[in-house]
Length: 170
Image (cartoon, rainbow, N blue to C red):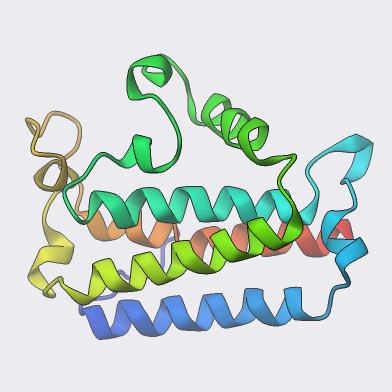
């Protein structure tokens, strides 16, 4: 997460999310279907693969905010990935989505964002600062950081990160 001060209210969080999403959508809006589906350098991720990745992570947090299993919502088996690092998880997400059509990926990308907004709609400002563990129902352990950090990391900061990679591909 960046050094920028955390939003202190849901309204501020939503405004930052909207700004980040609008910037990404504007960048995507200038691209053709061919640009969105062309494999990246050395056969790497196409832009649509970045969108599928963003959707999976955003949907995971949206589901977690509803006190439901995050990994299952991302199409992952929690037991199977327990020893995986983030790079391994990202590779699994890529493998699950690489053969999906652009239309499917775009629909999922928009639906995951809708799910995030719906999940946030039911939260108070105070709930944004409850620990991650509060949403899993597990012992706190290492999951004591406020959930807002995960929301930021899987929305506007994640959008900006992938937007930079997308623009570098063009």
